Image (cartoon, rainbow, N blue to C red; front, side, top):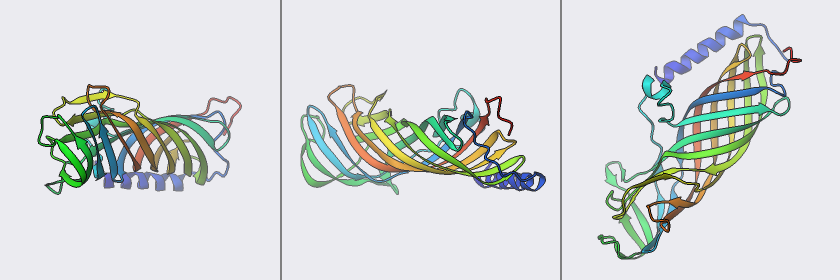
Length: 283
């Protein structure tokens, strides 16, 4: 199913429920409610200065371009229990600490890929610093020089992934409600840590790909929520924020590290459920 077909289906179902349901005006988001959701994201990043440093080198690449990496859509990749974590995904579980307000824990699995090529041409960036004793053609001192990001020089990806593990505070408000359908808005703020699995090949070093606590992030989110039969929902989210990773592992040698920071944005489509566990609650 294409994204356009999915959107049209959601709109059609929403209109159907609106006209067949009785209007309600009370707040359905109650203290003691739990919710959970799963979905997928598309991410974008600003350019980033990346510093690589180790025993034989210390250099910075300026304004590096990177993009996300979408998995081709097919049922097995996106819905098989054994492959759910392959695409860029969002998972969250939350609890309403008051009417309207929830606290939640989530995992935003993005993918960040340095672009060696842009429009079939090598990406060229400014380099400052020095590379010594690498045994490659890249040894030398650099001061505002230009370098091509050829694959034999650098491959750099947070593709398993750019893992933003975070806690968020959100508020929910009904914009329109019927007995079996509510259309709501939610907004919130969050903070968390980055635990990327960074796939790096730098100079002549062997490929390195291990999870590592690399830094922190913070962000804000706004979303529109469509809930059916009081429990099941589809939610469209936009999230934006800042990521700072001062301690990225790049090779098997512990002294080899990278640092970078950048702004990110996400567009998410998620599916979930909300349940009432308070026996005194009747709505």
